[in-house]
Length: 163
Image 1 (tube, helix red, strand yellow):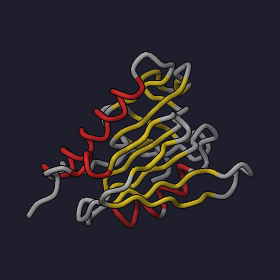
Image 2: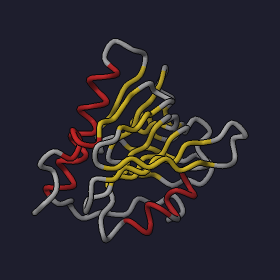
Image 3: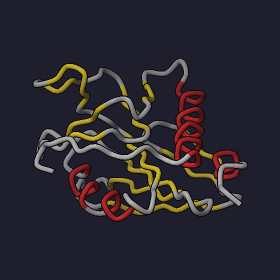
């Protein structure tokens, strides 16, 4: 990667539906607060490594900080969301997360399963270096503490999975 942007194939209808439902849930809860959710059209750059990505959903608190080299790219997300797919899951969990951990403002990284109702949230610990995994499945809720939002797994996944 080394700061290069690679083309990604379009997602499945299930992927798009899950991303939209998560964004909608966040938008509804963030309304009127100094936080803003963005779609996958927004580029995020990891200044420490140069990686630029288009997360499925991102949340910024307070003032948007822009990449010094590209004013259309933000560098200070607090939450990043990736809907997993067979082609991207290993990268999203591994190398991409290794880059994301270098974003000083990032407090939570949410991975969304496309095959079962399961949200996996990695939350940065107070030491700033380690992360704790929080999982929510069908019938449960997940607290995005960094932005004060509660995600209902049942609502996110209602009619969202094939089968």
